[in-house]
Length: 81
Image (cartoon, rainbow, N blue to C red; front, side):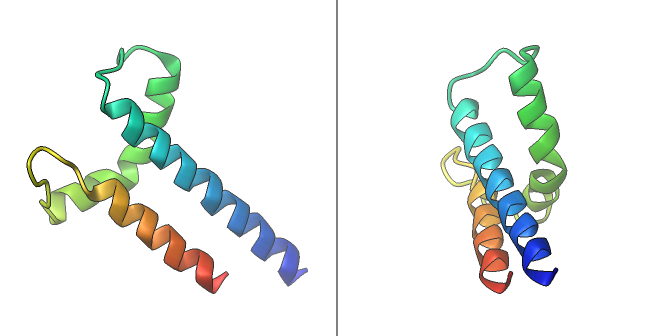
């Protein structure tokens, strides 16, 4: 039973990590904000990314490092699952 729950958590974290990567890549190309995919990526990632941007203003040269921080946190969480 525990193995099944751990597998679900691991898969969920992996999917969320790929969603963050997709949002970061799409943010480089000035996407249409009314596109449903762009809206989904924004609504799925902003609740996690915005607090990090607000607390740690580590934008250097116009590059937002908050997705990297979240991905690093996900990788660390996956080590414990």
